[in-house]
Image (tube, rainbow, N blue to C red):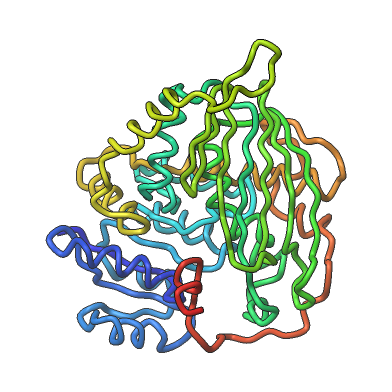
Length: 388
């Protein structure tokens, strides 16, 4: 029975707790920690974890408990420090996205994992979704042909009060805006499906959130060998209609699911009816996808529990988390400096270092409201739409 600790008991911690509770024969949550006095104990009681010990300090938790795995679900600026402390204490780590605000911190986390022989995984729960797994399987099959163009829309919507929470909307504590903390999922999927680009250009804006220093909208173009991938990162899109649309030489596929395959006449114009045979082949491949036993956080947590038990690489490791941060960093560098950024970013690049964003990033607005907690439920995507 693996012993689990949770550091940070805010909103996203509930997804971790739910995930671990799906595997009662494999693990037990024995400790919770939050810097707000009494919060860890209150969350434990609310969620049926009466036997879990509560701490106000991660240092105290790591010193007192003999854990196999810890989930870190705290604000991004604390991820590196807490992850490194846990790894040095001999505990494997599953850290929430984003891995850390800088590549320098990501590399320190990776080094700590290697030096202490521990496992490090970064949350990328959208890889553990049947629709995204199906899309990747189709792209990997080669049926679409080489990718020409993709549109990746990380479209979210948040009201202005969202940034009233004390750590949000600041370069220092949140580490960035929607590009880092919302589109990180889609940027991870972009890396997973298409690999690493060779260059990035981007623009940043704050279009609708006056209580936030950081961007609420960015548009980036990622350059590959011959393909271009557009990524829109947003918390200003009503309806939160997210999508990945991929144009291959032979067919277009997308999530939400759609398949189109054009065929050319002798003059190069589209032939009526397209290529129904290729469409049928792609549809058959998609239909053959074996559904995942668990999706989202439970899917990744189940994989991580297996990795801890078997001492194998998790499906999403620290290097995967770093790749997503490298894309975010390139988007910020391109948008702030108004130039094309070549990848990979070297350690002597100023944007590799922690602190460069604090020095160079624009304050679109100054944060005037700062609250320790916000009322109301956390609603995202389909859960919000269901209430309309």
